[in-house]
Length: 195
Image (cartoon, rainbow, N blue to C red; front, top):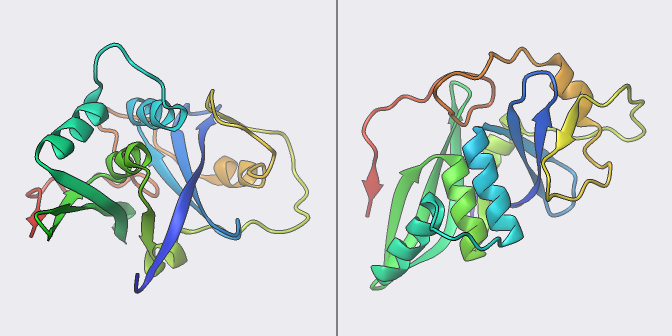
């Protein structure tokens, strides 16, 4: 895909000081990471999808999977297309009757569905350039101020982000759980469907 990099879910981090969740995407070579702040419910849904946990009643993302399949659609991939005012914008890219349909959505929803459908997550190179983090080699680390959510393996590779999380000026979580690069609320606008 032109101007897109495939990225993978690396982990979901929890700040011990603010209890906010940070979804960490990474490239295939582990050379760049993309932190996306998400809400606790969205984080739990992603963990359920990653672990393929069977739930007694369908959660929201499980229901969306059923709706997509019931409408004889197929999720091809998801895209994180831009970052504006520290807010990430993403799309579900569906195919129905050989026609491509693009649905605007939050990154956490896109990623949760990508996990369930086992489809690629593509991120615009400009987004990676603006919001990505490259870990430095041989970084001297202090104390750990974040933890990995239960269910995700932690091999120490993200401990370089402890300093990063410490230095952030993060607002306390409010009622809205936006996916932002730092705290600017989403513009509610009109949800878009692009055929």
